[in-house]
Amino acid sequence: MREDHERFMDRALRLARKGEGRASPNPMVGAVIVKDGRIIGEGYHACCGENHAEINAIRNAREPIPGATFYITLEPCAHQGRTPPCVQALIGERPARVVIGVIDPNPAVAGRGVAALRAQGIETIVGIREEECRRLNEKFFKYMTTGLPFVTLKYAQTLDGRIATAGGHSRWISSLPARRYAHRLRSVHDAVLVGAGTARLDNPELTVRLVRGRNPLRIVLDSRLEVPLEAGVFRNQNQAPTLVVATVGAPEERLRALAGRGVETLQVAAAPGGIDLPELFRELGRRGVTSVLVEGGGATITSVLRERLADRLAVVVAPKIIGQGVEAVGDLGLAVMDQALQLTATQWRRLGPDILCTGVIAPAEAPGRDL
Image (cartoon, rainbow, N blue to C red; front, side, top):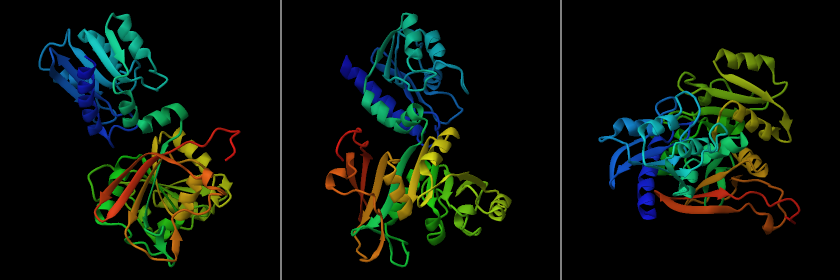
């Protein structure tokens, strides 16, 4: 029986992934309805504000549902949000059983959906493919449990660890397949963030052009508002809005000039080297930004790593050597190898001539350990 549960949950997971990049800030969810060993209906959450996976599966059902088994990657919601609570719709269909991948961490749900199903005498099983279901929505889980966005740190470097030449030139370190991958990452994050140096020297647009998908919010760290108004990140505000983050006391005339371009600004406290990043990420969480892709440059990469703000790392290594140049990562204040940041769940893959390394950044050791 467990093998059947896992097989149908795997199908629900594949369906859920179809909502990637469009469901946010909601989680990706897939649902499958099975009767007599046959799938009679299925659905997924395609876009925030639209029907949830369970409702789509019910509407797509080809046979009467009473007595069937539902497979759902995430606990059905039990609260009124943009759509009615899914658990009541499930109860109304009178299934014999509901199989759930993982409990919803949203405090408005968090076991209430399971309790409602069991209160109606519906057999409810929780924990099938739990780790896979949790990993599918790692951004959502981080945001719901901490109030902070999930942070992916991505950059491309040469074999000798440079992200630009000594003169700042970086186009192109990585290959076209690697750049397509970068655009794909942008499309599945709520925001993409760079420092002022990257905005000036590389002049990126930070939009999604090489793949299909939505444009993220563009965030530029610019303490004194020195990025030229003609920069690429200030174009097409109607298609991809930009938020410029400055320190308190930034020049008023520059604030007015950006506002005239339709660019929003945010002033936060200063920190050594620029912006107080922990404060910024807390503010982004309050604004409902559930995920941020950090693309550089070197100072920003180093600050994010030093502050332990990154959750996942994605590094493209190109088979090139340039010698003296801009380091990908600067001083992290680490004295011995035991202090090195560790990656877990590490994966390697080819992107054209380049190698991509991805992994989860392990949390810092508990206080009291000799780091």
